[in-house]
Length: 169
Length: 319
Image 1 (tube, rainbow over the protein chains, first blue to last red):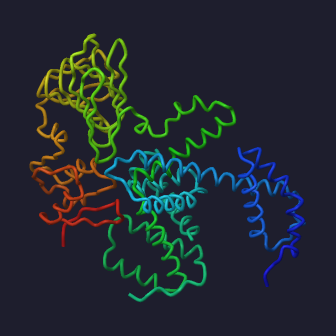
Image 2 (image 1 turned 60 degrees about the vertical axis):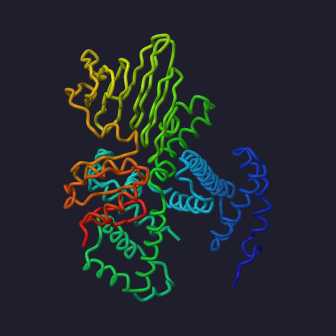
Image 3 (image 1 turned 180 degrees about the vertical axis):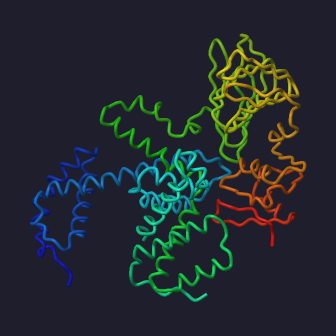
């Protein structure tokens, strides 16, 4: 059976905290419209990820909302910085390497997909994975660059690969 | 091959770990027929195994579609360092000074740069001419005392013009400084050393840590120098200026060296199987289309290139 807003007290939860959350977000962003959008995303996330435990059991609802909103905000910034880096990278490609608008979009989506997958890995694990997968460096090359052992790099690679396979959808 | 069964459940940790092991194994080189068979039967073991392998293929497809350099810039530590520094600077209000401290990609912010496979000629303000080879970056700093070129990456060829105010022309690299004595010369930064080849006039070299040990390289000679010394001059390599005409000459050049040279002109990674590394290559090759050179190698020599991804190839003996 599908859950409705009233089953979980979602309507009153939303009405109690939505103006506060928009204010909280607006102080961290430049635009109130963006803040309202992000507040909406935050509530959607609360709605979809808390199906089992009732909302009234959350002890500090605003701290809880702020945690989720902060995560969404960081993801947004990460995406924006990726897009900016990507546009800059494309602008510096010589004309001979020009790619079509379709290819640009596909490549951006691929980059975002990989960026999302790698976002929660430790920095060195992520960098080792990229150096091996994109640049084709050997484990020995990467170990020399990091000043660590090949065994460590091998462990990083397995960790990153398993992580990616767990989270790719 | 039978089609995959439709996955209905999510593969668990153990199966994904095995899939990861297969992926890592495949990166070391092509699978033997026995290994391929083992992988096929692993995949067919259950719907979960098949589902895990679908994920693996999806991941491989995504990674193979990313050009290496662009991917490293967009996904790697460069951008993340800038991101981190930016958020610190935003908090402290010092954004203006930031952009110079955290140059994300030094080459891209240089005064003149070329991408992989690109060559360019630049006329400088004093009438000198600067040629940039593939994947190179140079800063130009002229002031009242000197004309200074800072080679950050790659290879340049300089044709100096006499300067009306008699300022010396110098080229700085990590390993030291070169001063032109009316001249045409080539400078290339390699990983450990800097190459200097002089085709006209002469150039004085001073290694960074031994500025007292100046060496004058005359026309028709070349040297390699590091932080503390320069090698004795020797006759100029015939190939040293070939890139200016977009040509790569090889005269019984070992395949490994040939591929190293060629790799500077194309995106992606090419590896050479040790079994064929010493095969002798001869000919004059047009650098404008490196992939055509690879095609012609495959057609004319007993070689084949196994592409693991669009950007990652291994050169092996054919058959």
